[in-house]
Length: 166
Image 1 (cartoon, rainbow, N blue to C red):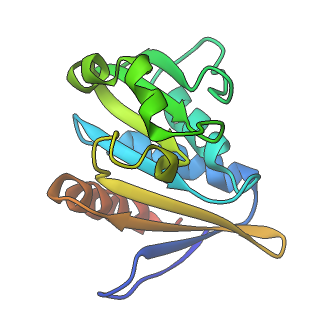
Image 2: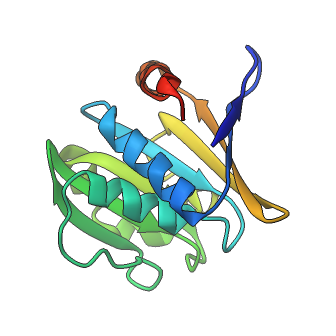
């Protein structure tokens, strides 16, 4: 995994393969804040679900980690509370989120992982961290952008944790 960064841009990671994407998920889990919202951006096949599954697995989910493509939301018990994985790709209108119980979820979920967050605009809590994934030739690129103070602390911890040679 190689990295680049500047003061005005997101922290960019070049991920050689799916295993590197999963390793990023584990790194995110290792230093996550007590409560966080992560928006996962990227085209189909960019690695959003791979990253989410790896993060959840690293947080202790031992059972099947299902894609929420058809259910829109899957909830998991993790260290420190509950995690919610949302996939809003099939959402026709953000108003459909009213039927998912997001108010209750906002109170109970310590971690939100939201794929296709733009489809739920206005109905979702704001992101602390945005992870934009893209495929570039035969590798993936992840651009991590902190959008809150919690996100800035998380990204700083991730950079510190990752400075040991990855």
